[in-house]
Image (cartoon, rainbow, N blue to C red; front, side):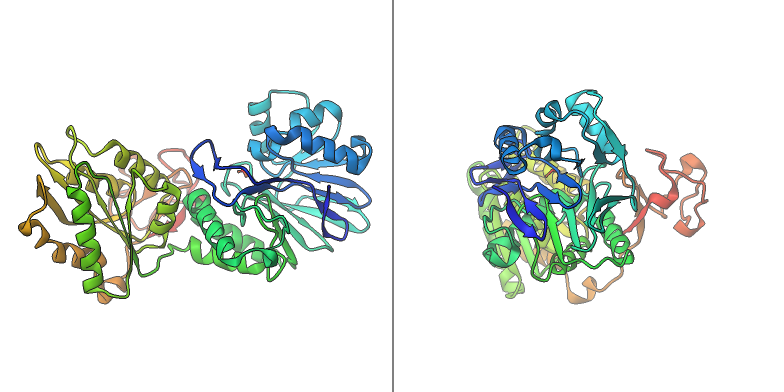
Length: 457
Ligand code: FEO
């Protein structure tokens, strides 16, 4: 069954009530999800994206029922190559092999990489390209590289003023009534934030630049129709405003404590740190998680909201607990900004756990304090007595928070230009301000031009 979105635009996606994880086992889902595909029946019939492979038969059968004949589809738009939106394409194209597929150049690579070179009728589009769909309406394409894959794009439909935004502004959240104003608001915002943190946060600088670019296009937007979750119909720009806030090194007055423990010594320190934070700053919200038990996506959402984190692990076999180590790998990949971190943990033999935690937290982009709580076997009074100074260093003072942070410049590949270090490999001396780096200088890692860099603190 197709569901009306607006005028001649219909939802023909898959409401995935039973989905429990996404990206393999990497993203937990508690409130269902949807793969949103849309059918536009104007002078031309346009299929905007498809659904994931396991649902392809239902999807194609439904389209056949609605259209009578799949050959009525004039154009397919593939806004992004990931298989939750293209998994049906091979089966669909076997039935209508000549139908043009409009997508970015990177999406062609992605589709051919996943499904092979099948001779599909690709039409490569770039930002600003348009497609006439009849009845005086057209589609305008907007490339959205790294939001969240290199091949992603959005599509704006004129006259109906709908922005099909692909993954951006989405949520893993099943809402049969489809629209944001019909959804449970607490769950909607919880899922929208979790989605942003766990899928889009690494690309926040690109997100800010893309929001600026879309704003400059002066489009009237009446609806934002993402590829997962609700369609933003009531005040659609509220999610855009939220993305601006989230993309800008977001933080609240919160602290997250994340730890692993063997025989509960490190756990005791975690709880004592939580108590001390409340003693020093009663209004600060504190959350405590055993990272080996709790859902990592939910913890990361709390980390995102926090101004500081404390991470604990006992020293085990000259390292930290394997569960904490894996969690730190995920933490680094999400590229959080503007947050402090501290380390704590017990040891019985060698005791290098805290140093390892501090190094890995620095590598993950955190401003790591020197103070740490290192407890021989079980925490004793002497260890607990160090916690107040640890907490003071971690949550800082209001004066410290207002100090400006040094500005650096980051390449989309992850390399960071630090003016203090310069780039001696290309003759840029330490102490060279970004403005003085030659215009033809390129990223020493991936060779993107200077113009591709964005500012970070
Ligand atoms: Fe919903 Fe990037 O796929």
